[in-house]
Image 1 (cartoon, rainbow, N blue to C red):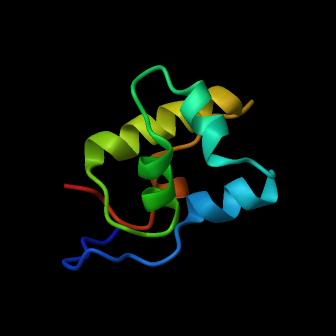
Image 2: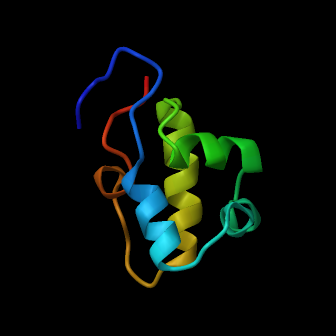
Length: 81
């Protein structure tokens, strides 16, 4: 993963995966074991840079919806700070 200095990292693999599976932001919010908002998921999907902590929350929520385990590199093309 690359470190991108600006705030926009472009469309993320998470968005592609969610579209392929017809998942909505609400699915991740509901599945999250921690606090996660629709706005946070939307920002992450569309490439607004989010923190590493938030990336891990989204990853945990995503993995709870899947039969296989994903890693951050499969959902994001950058590493949050």
